Length: 138
Image (cartoon, rainbow, N blue to C red):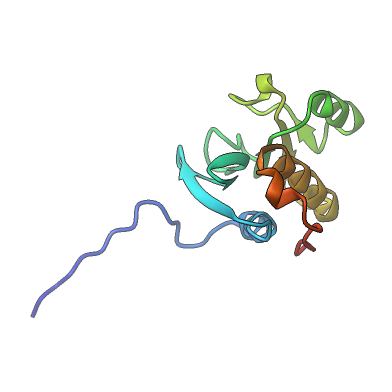
């Protein structure tokens, strides 16, 4: 009898529900793909990151699930001023203007999909953004 031990270091047994929903939205964008970086899933197009998941169970999420999203100049300040209970300045990338969005019961998934699409457009090649916008799953 041969016993084989398989270890998985990167994939938790059960992923948080907000991550499953976030992944579905991000990967619906043309040529978007997922890359694990610093222990967290990040979402990219042509290897340029437009969003990063922040798990509540580590220092990235600091007790709340969230997503850090690339944003146009001024977007971060407007979002936080409008609703500081839902938006925040994320660590590391916040000084570059990225906006954090908490993923909890108050999440407006339609609005989040629009924010993610805008972030995607900031980094995607023009040929991918010239076609009609895909309908994103919510």
